[in-house]
Length: 170
Image (cartoon, rainbow, N blue to C red; front, side, top):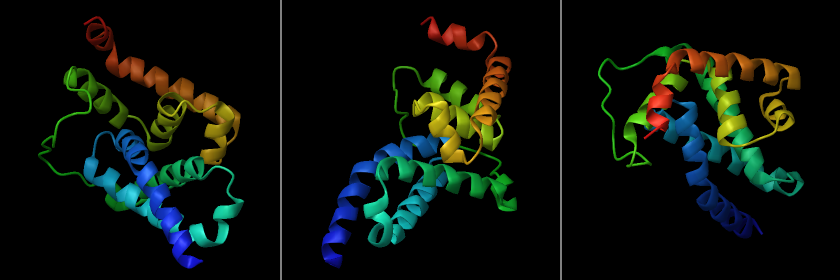
């Protein structure tokens, strides 16, 4: 019985790892190493729950996404989360080779947002979740999600100014 649960989890993890990694990259503003760590932590937490509560979880993919966001927010609360290397070199090819400047501009703007604001933007606009789903994932009220959305989008407009229109017009 345990072997079948382990196999079920392996299938689940293989199917969701790429999606979780993309979301983690957005949450971390392009820090692929931290994104990998967050995905690993998320999957390890899911594995612990898999045997006991997997049957009671209606949507394991959404639950994993919630675990990822909470893991990210927990990481951001740590003192060491603010440590950054002085020279950052981009690694690997970007996901969209046609427009790397737009991608870098957006990731830079996302990195300027507060962690909870960034999480709201990623969940609402990248994951395309409803206000209620986002509120449940972050354990806040729907009004708090709306407030954070307005604040985060305003800050993004402020940071990006006319530069985003210049990239979108290409």
